[in-house]
Length: 458
Image (tube, rainbow, N blue to C red):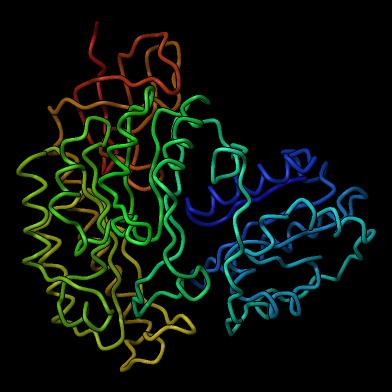
């Protein structure tokens, strides 16, 4: 069996849990799809580009059915959950489309599919006609399969790096006007603290030095089970062998003083804040069904930097939301100039079926959205480069991701999240340094968001 994982870090965890269930059910995972009797594609269904990528990947996977070994292609994940019926009808190249309710018995489902015999090949068709146009009703959340003593399935790690995502919750209770995730991921469901801590220990035993806590809204963790993120961080901070705890996707308006204090003072929690502001103009934010304004956002940043001036801070923003004016884009630009964030993802708004935003007007023309994206992206590129240059001379810690015998390596500083905030080139390290090592050094250079760090000598 060959598994392809698309989309976000939360999907990566889902893929590893699926792989664990399949391995426990007797399936052997292979790296080469031509060697697989079945190819499982964990799809993404968040935005149109992700939907198209998922469909293209399924069609590419179906091409392997002509090699005489691959007998089935199975779609799982968000696209399969969100558009199950439509996807099954429009994509006969996929032998099965399985929603989240199939996960507990994914091995049994796959055995049944393979028992149906060799799937017929289908002639290539115009992929543009395959994009689903309407969501289907989401089934009830399936009960989780557990192993004795834990509420989680041991993951089958698909990567070998020293950093790993650790899912703390699924679903979302927020109803942001631009986001369809709650419609197919369901309500917010936190994992118990002891289960998350147990999985962190499991990961550390397999060489992980950094865990990245992932969910749709990490600041909401625990509200449904009588706890909170602060208590989870305290529990994780006791895990021997775990060096970095990185928290992703914190709603700025939901960061409590107690949470901020825990993030700023716990030993293993890195000084890194992922704060998706999405915009800064109060009117646009209200129309997005979000909260905040430049003053409250800047106050939060001041509170962080007053304790940890070296903290890394990233965000995401959306431009072109229905009704957005040039003056409101100016408010966003002025805020970003004052906030001086380390990294910002800039996205152009697009209607998502089933969301409130899709019903709102007036729509901003696509060409205007593109111009605004270019403007804000150019601004944040310059600001991020300045923020990186200001780190020159600072002492920082680097997680080595690859190294050579000449003392050179590539990794991430404590202020850089995986795959989002650039990388660090390490020079002058111990020739025996290996991937997974943590090395202290001084920032000596910057190129955009990338850093150069000279390792400290012993």
